[in-house]
Image (cartoon, rainbow, N blue to C red; front, side, top):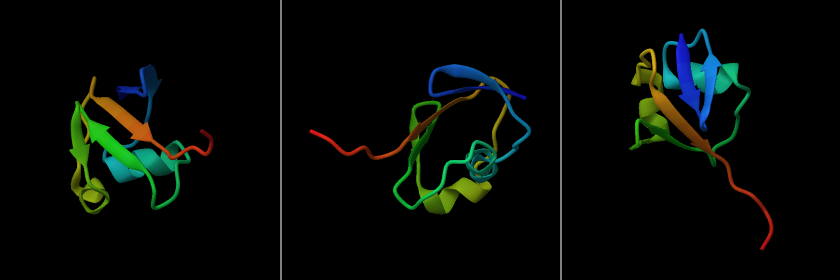
Length: 65
């Protein structure tokens, strides 16, 4: 299915947000995720179904100043 992930159109196999993170090799406890502009908590990612055209934002912390 086609999703918009961090502003880029991506073709993915994942049907749920947690599977998308694995598919795209995002790991760690410090990720923040949003689906169509709404925050998705880590505990909710397993049950968060994705649909064609959804906008997903995945944020990771960065070091620096």
